[in-house]
Length: 559
Picture 1: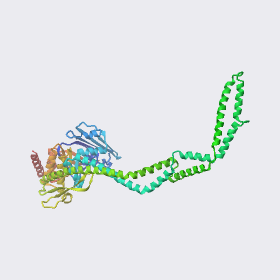
Picture 2: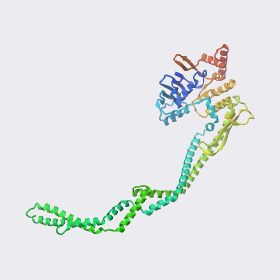
Picture 3: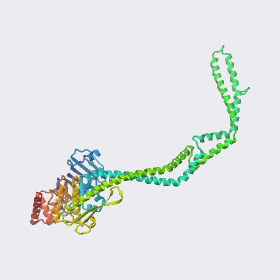
Picture 4: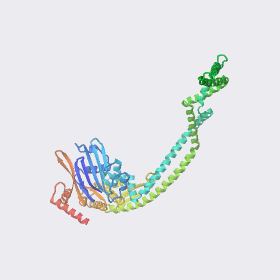
């Protein structure tokens, strides 16, 4: 629960450092004194949006630090999950905002994200303000109330898992059908393109080979003449290099006995002779192989033109890219052929997923139906003492046409303050005072099912007074007696008198500006504050006596 709050340079607050007590506490003060400012400050370390305009005029930054005692609550999982220090008891949440709009957050002195603050804040404090009464018209809020009473957190989580899987399969099925339909419209085109490529019987590396052969065939006579001349220069009987080299080799061999140094030269010349003789033979062979073949040349050119035309048609520059396109068309036709099988498989999976969703949704519905009966009884039990003796309160559960992420149940709270009145949606028929009492009763009811350390009521007493206000205070007092902290911001003395601890918010006008403060009232201060609430600005003896009597009355009730 909230043990202390430190605020510096926030709105009208210069410095505020206040401790809070367990049980039921009340905060009072004149309108405009700064009660809503303190609430706004509490919201910042709990993840609410930071605004540099909230910084006190003239200050460079503001700091809000809240201390919580959590020893009685099982919250270790949050800190472990987020890798945050936690001694099992104290939690310190701090938020700093600079005039430039930058914001920093810390949980137990470890930097934290706003999302982490929000998650932790939802576990620490529930702030009920007047605008929250509008939630009565929201189906999700009503469903959440019933789920809390049903204690179906695990069942809801399992349902959401099944529903997410079902929606994923359903989307895959929709996409597969869409793609299959689109593919069928392109099937004839794809088939034609593939047949054209397959008929071309393209082979990897073929283009380079054909282009080289086309060059050779186109210059066959020139090549043949060149090879012949080269061979003749090597092998001519009179001037040929091969014969001359052979004769030179013999000459050196003849002087070898008298000139040993010639042996090495002879060997080298012998090697050259063998190599040139081999080259001469190769030239002769190739000269015979080269022929001008116009039919082959026509075939090669026709084949190349086929490849070039396909490249131009498909806007590619290589035969390899054509082969990739051919494979892509083949895959598309294969997908079209097997698309129905894929769709049927997805349909079967979708049906299995839907069955899980339906089964789990029915489990949820059963738990919610039982919780609805409990809610109707508890709400009547709470509202009758609050001045609505003939209250009718029902929880309507009707099936949805199709499941959604919350299940298959529509929840609607219907209400009538009169015995024979027509039941209608609560937000449409309840008065402001009735809605306040309904919301307090709902909060009291669900607080028993949720281990929430602190609940703050901001003027929950709107539209009520007298004995009804006192009974509402008793409900809040009872809520604060079960290892929970309840803080009520109120304008009613009947509620203020029942608080175990009483705080007062007030403004102080000084030359440098107006500031807001909060103090814990002692017995004397509490009597005077309640007397002011009873009689107004003028403090009379009668008001003092009434305040004492009211406090004595409430103290005797507590005993």
